[in-house]
Length: 96
Image: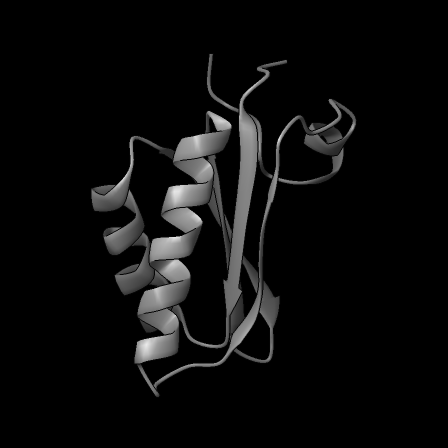
């Protein structure tokens, strides 16, 4: 398992998530690992990188979502050292 941090952002619109991910990828050296449709229009994106890069990217994504009235932020967070068992349940595994 990679010891990279995990960042998650979940919003209520796929279009806004795509735009937020663009902002996040430009803000920090992160790996976009996957996204997941949650339901009722909500979608989540998963990123991996060192803690600082994940935090920078998540903050940039939050700022973008908060500045647009097009979507509602559901949640956003960073886990510095995710347990490897999470990779068995969620689409967050880094490609080898």
